[in-house]
Length: 417
Image (cartoon, rainbow, N blue to C red; front, side, top):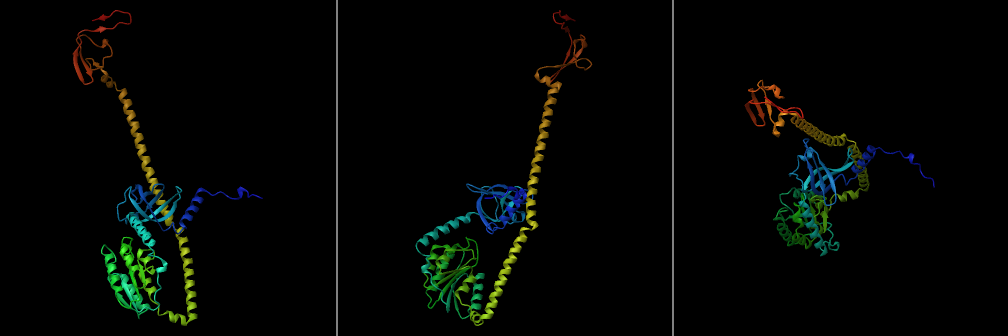
């Protein structure tokens, strides 16, 4: 079998390979909209206003960046050792060949405990069969009376009433108001549901509220609320939060809608459907146009995504980080140079001290000055009766030459004057 020659496949440069890997990361939809949980370490806040840190757990770490604009919107002070959940997108910092998370939102990891409690209670109720598909009931095709459990002051109520009025104005809506957030909400929801259970000729119940965090929606994860929904004598439709929000009340209901408005749409027929069915050709044309628009929208979204990948903003973001890195290196180099000069200066001071003739006085020696104030190097400079000055390490002594002893050469006799 003939093997391909290796030189037919040109080698990529490091820059080309790194750029290709960055494009791969940025083309992944999951990595461009992701939450990551971990502990903050190596937190750095340079003068640029950007924030750099590392998210770590027991076995891995991930470098993270928050640009100055997003850092100013943090709702809490970020500190080392803090457990957080970070949202953003994954990309590659080309200069270091390092993938990192570009963070746009941070939240304390305490909400993770709520999710664990959610999963624990879900598993227990699911084991009891409370969420079995066999318990689900079909919705009535043409309901005449609908019960509605929601906040009387929330925007979701008006959205649902407008939708019901638009889609099926013949239906009667009975509002059973309840708090949908806070400590009093679970008991209020249970009471509101039980009031509807006592009404005659009720066809279905709609339980809804607008979007919010996991803590905001927590009342719909209350065990008593879930059990009360499961015990409903009529089908229940839930429309709680946004499309990505799931509560235990959704699993206990007969039908779960992604939003309150969608729940109102599911529970009622659309009076315009008959008109659409009577005109098949118009329906086909409308369907073709919707399909065409959807296809063009996808094409436009794909082009917009490709354009975003080529945007100079990405390069500017990388250059910002590189500038921060260069500033840090310059500061470290300057400090090192100052330290080196300081060390050299200390060395010169030690050498000057060693060469200082007065330093000898510290070892017990003295310096003698003759009557002219000159240092006496020989007894020949001194006459009997001369006034002398003797310099010691901590002062001086005034003296007078009473007698002079001249040391002879080796082996000679001492000469005295």
